[in-house]
Amino acid sequence: MLTWPALLLAPLLALTEQSIVYALSTPTCQTQREAYLHGVPIVFIAVTLLFTAMAWGEARRLRRDGLAEPHADGDRRALRRYFVAWIAVGAGALSSLVVAALWVPQSVLSPCAG
Image 1 (spheres, helix red, strand yellow):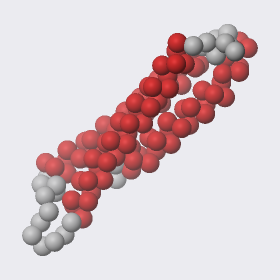
Image 2 (cartoon, helix red, strand yellow):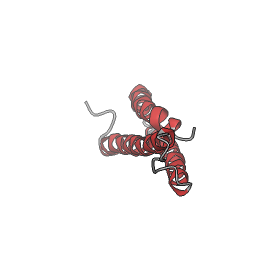
Image 3 (cartoon, one colour):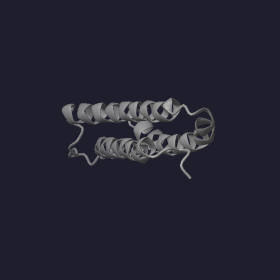
Image 4 (cartoon, rainbow, N blue to C red):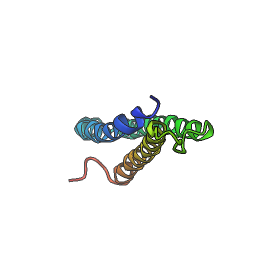
């Protein structure tokens, strides 16, 4: 169960962060306070990294418990859970990278330019 936030919510958080920053750009330009624009990505990066860490911990737990190898009886449910856990780690890490990459031009360029 610890893999689903990284698999589903982390990519949605990356899109949500972009929408919130876009919506805050006009009020930020009017008040000349850019702290809001830098606070939003920090919070979203922290949350997506938390989801990624949860999925990574679940993947490591499954490997430690020996559920990463298929059993002789043909039950592949544990192997599937291990695979989904590592896909969730990748999705969460990629979502964190997307939020960080969207923050770079936002920190370099002014929201009032143009």
